[in-house]
Length: 392
Image (cartoon, rainbow, N blue to C red):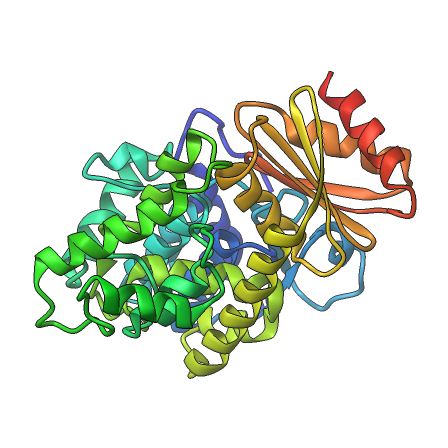
């Protein structure tokens, strides 16, 4: 297949659509994050509508799946390069949405595409260029989502109408009471705030709910200045547009959780199957594990780096939350059992983790300002030293 012109921002979506259009079988291989999972769903729904058979899977390291035997005419990697065709930009769902509009315009789901943008870490406002480098497609997503009934409202971006449940289990923020629904239920009662969001909930209550979450996220003495910006992702959410959850931000959070905790359920959800309850269960389980790991993490601080050891926590989500809400340093390395993840603020953690993985005969993959590796972690000190060398 001819290489796409890098000067053409819409080329990835158009080239993927062209590669898939006449294929007898398309295999979609996504990285294990919410943005790539959403993009896979956007593209898969269009393939189904166009009558193109497909298979979809989620892999932490998509390269592991590329060498296996397959009857697919085209393998599309989503969130990474390496396939016959690839959607590798971040956020990836705008390019997937462009491809879907080429394949089956009526099947392109702007709400799912918007959830993918939010899952990738973007906080889109009225300026479409905040959605992606592809401003034209970003504008289309925004306008199509609005036409479908998706609007912003006061409040917090959680997937459930039960606000204590949502506040306790969101992974868009970490606060002292994260993971404890009873604590949030008491906090709501103390402030005379509603426990459930309905269409009748006053806008003032929504603003006070947002203030509660924002204050909780930054009230710990260990919260870095970036926490105030990070928590904005969960405030004044998008809702409506046939979203299967209370907010699109909540949809994004569930996609991210299932991509890591229960990929099979995540794929079913992204494809539009009846997987809401199972996905919410995975989201809660993921959140409890993450927040416990952040709270109980063993940390070591170095110049420019906070290293974290965890035995049970999902390393990628732990790395992001520690960076955003706990770390005084711009880089975070989380070492788990046979895997590690890194998150950075203005530093190249992908290159550093690649160095650490190579030193331990491992494999890594970079996703924007985060990275993941599968490697030998029996010598955590050696992993940290190699990572620091890669940062230098």
